[in-house]
Image 1: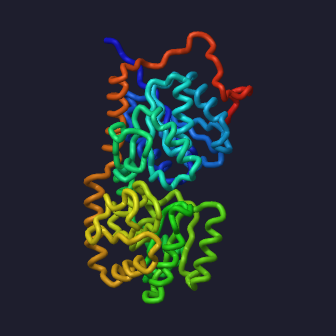
Image 2 (image 1 turned 60 degrees about the horizontal axis):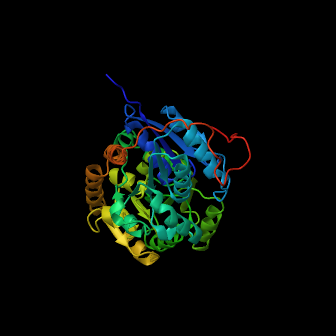
Image 3 (image 1 turned 90 degrees about the horizontal axis):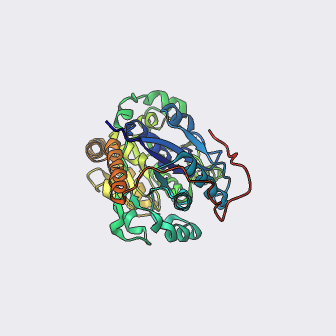
Length: 402
């Protein structure tokens, strides 16, 4: 019996910090088909390495390409050399700059299959990234969008070449997290009787924490027994947001936890989950909150309305409208039964339609189908020394490996 070797897959991403796309990559690991595929993860920014050990514990090798700025074209050369040396069959890149680098490197390395997953709307990108990403999208064999809105925002390639595969979450991980509300509230200095509104997201401008803090300040005037719990971090943004909370008179009622790796555990301390973003794809933290039975108040952007049906699973509000968000909080605060029914409905919806095991199976099916359609064979060792790429830097391949 002839045995074919496993297809080698390099999953490429900008960094391995505690972001949504990065956590999604980690959540998928237990569900990968190791009998057909041999996976490796590559990333660029050395200081974004919080998830490296978690990936390696799953038996997945991790390579850091040691790039400090994504405008450094040595990134392309380093990935190209790595692809050729490792005889990879598939490059699957996540997020724009990793996608750009991965496409160029895979083209030069003649890697048989190039896939890219876009996790957010293209309008969130700066102009340079948006233009370069759009110009290179046609180099993908398959482009995956995490929601229909994300797919529509991806100009530059025909819509028939885009596959929409919604994000999924690991329900088994959620089940393994017991409720520890009292313990967490003590840790954060929040009273057991307070209604806790929570948001889990990096403190980047696109997440628009300003509107949420303004909405909470309005809500707090009518419902003093409340607290706002913000989980996430981004350099100097926390100081700016703390200053805003103090100016609005709620500085003592807004808790910044910084980055946390126990997000599923923290959900047990939250009564109402909030998202105030001006742009989104399909947020993992939202799916996790709904799966845990939390009612949600969200801005109606990106893939959120496709998940949250207004008045059934939660409440949708306009972007940058703190008063509308505040009124949604007040309505839920005053109606415990409404919180319970919305939370239960949201949990059922997410558990029925957003399973990460199904997401992984669909992606791996695309790998095999597209390779078969292309008639691609496993990558072979180059015959003789390959010519350097035009952007090759005359240095040894001594980039950091984790």
